Length: 278
Length: 256
Image 1 (cartoon, helix red, strand yellow):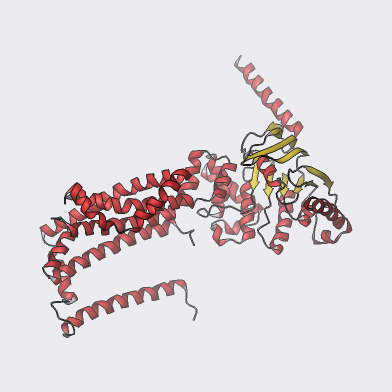
Image 2 (tube, helix red, strand yellow):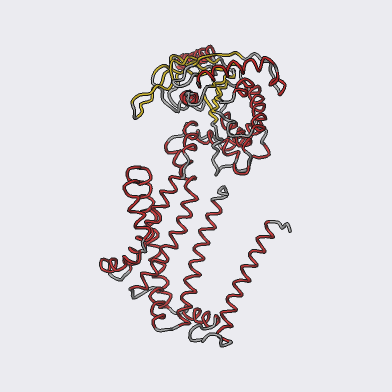
């Protein structure tokens, strides 16, 4: 009898894993999502009829004019903000709040805690889950190696450069090994040279970890350079007006930027954005 | 001209010691050379001797104990009281808008104006000193706590939330460490505030305490004793100040 229950229990777990595997742990589905802000001057629509599907392991970039709601959409995906209608699935299950086991978030500013060392900042999400100190340290060190900052484990954020801080922030986003990484204009505060280097760094980390990435940016160059697919959003209320497959070969490099296909894709996005800004 | 930080610190320390020695030497020499009347400014060595004698007298030791107890009691009441009130006001934008003008008004007037009221209601004993000490310090702690709460960055709260922190974890792991530097600074100032308030209250009206003795010596022009008392009080103030600053630096390395 006891064996039977245990076997049934195992069966359920296996079935669950099969279902999750079928949809893909890192998959994202957004269906008919709209959001309306209830402001002081009545209701104002922010997002309208967003439909998007991201296959596991893909790199999807959201671009659009300022105020189109791309950051809001990302925050909803992260479970940090509510939406009015529609639904969001991640790994086949709805998003009802922050879930660090499924989703890691990297913000525009690194937002590291100044009172913690680089290592402890990375281990912060694990500390919240009461992971044992030795394991915490081991996994945080592994992440530091991934972002190539192992020499800076005991430095405080103010002792790191802007690019290093953002790499620590990416490591923090990945430390719980979530299948999905959300990035909200992570390189916007960096200078152009650092920004280019960080793009390559991110692509390397992505190719090593094969996470699903949803990346918000203002930069058209950055969008085309990084993405498998670019989703172009309209001005407020934001909707998706174009889905552009970027079939430029990987690994991408500085030479990619001067390829004719690159310019063609960037022009296509710019035409949309210019029309929306007018 | 490049010096290592350690060498720089040593040079700074040396300069400070030399300055102190210079001041004390001048103090010693001025009355001895007749530049200042010894009745007005007794030499440092005489003041130091007087202080040593005072510290052997049971009555004066009792005075020190009384003053220390008054300071401790005021501090222990004022800090939690001010912190709780500050937290309540900081957490409610409504209270903050209502109370802020009154608080800044109270903070900006010299507290000694209110001393007669404390004497009328609490007499001239222990609790009057503690009451006045609390009154002076609570406001400071309250305003500092508000500032500390406001120093918590919303982005840090967002990060903690996105990694699934519970409200308790947010308080422990984000609010507390964010507020710590300002809170420690406030504790240091609070101790100095209670110290001066209690001494002032003792000088104003009292029958015990170091402040009372200083006041009596002053009125009777007993300069060696007066200066010995002042020396003692300033040494105590410096020691307390440095003790908290030391703790502050240990906890606040990131604040550079």
